[in-house]
Image 1 (cartoon, one colour):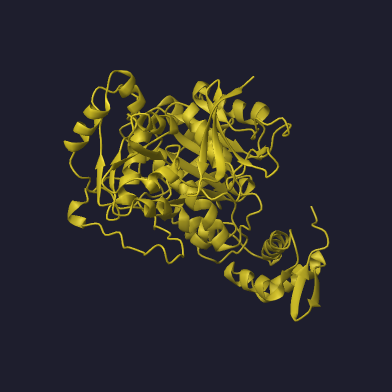
Image 2 (cartoon, rainbow, N blue to C red):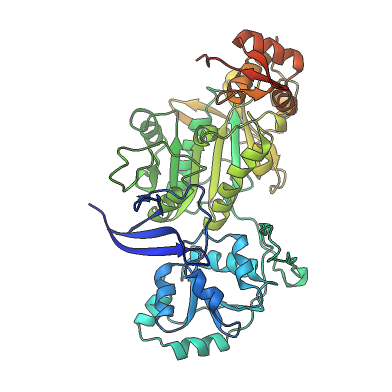
Length: 525
């Protein structure tokens, strides 16, 4: 039974409690917020994130160095030495809007001695560059792998030695371009300041790959295709190669790849009777694979578990990554099944979901592969045929399409619809033989548009696509007709086809005050 052993209060600048980060034994962390009745709710929905010990930070002198640590325990340890210290929490919790609190200040960022700690420190330093008066990124001597400033202090480090090390540390200069735009509060108290990076100071970095020239690390990729063509088989093939270090099928030199672990979210296939048998058929190392089955809360009021939701539970995914050593791949199959109430046809809503997911991939330098279906809009360029908003393909750095070979119904084609970071990757062909993905040795030169052009549209496919669009658009509440037609146009659904779909689904149109609305009485299944 887990029990709370420490709580860390996050307050606004006036000291009002906004939320707590709770440490459990066995080691675990959960966040909760006041419910207004003396109790707590175990989620942070709608709560504005802030910095730990914010009032003390704001009251401190501009002449004092402010230490930014990766966790609350480190901040408390520095506070006990009468130093100014704060943190945003975990290694992926920094937000650009926090930078406003450090304007004109002297800042020292103290990373944990591991890759995620280093990435966190660099993200913070990049965010503060040009806003703080000076930023220093301190590498403490003598730290072992995974150790932090608390370990350094436990081993005899003192405040005076720490300040001496800070004095000896050079000012930080960015080595990578900040990937997020700082969002400033619209308050006259804050004056927007441009973050300028001199390109002469930027050190070029090479793209790192999970699958060379096909699936990049630190990015979101998409795998799309019609149902039943083997997309899920393909993700399990990729998982098997990653966990065993076997060479990729298209590598002419058959060089082993770096081994890693895999996290799978699958809404359509059962773990025991489908996923595990298929992974065994592919001779995967099952000790390196975890499947997220849902989310549970350490709260007596919350019984059972709930479905994983990308919009609410990324912190749980990060915990899974932290508890799964050497994670290099996260598979989400299909991606839309884990987006909650997000309207997959609205660009803004989809971007709001995928941006944090892409940031997570970058923070942990792993590949996220989202699986999706194709629309039925034959004749449209492949890049526009991922089901839902164009934001899916816009956010992904690589989009791979699985299609059927028109001359061989058992042969599948894997072709690039988008490959921003690749150099002429070309396509591949594969078959599924006795439950195992078997690639052909030679690449294929066919484009994705050519691979899909054999499809014919008798009007039925387009109608089904329009019906699915209306079900999604009207699933929660009546929607203004003008908005429905606008979204349909953005998704390349003609007005004629949309009207046919309305009739097929018996969608009601009615006027309320001065606005025409559409309403779906029941959603057919």
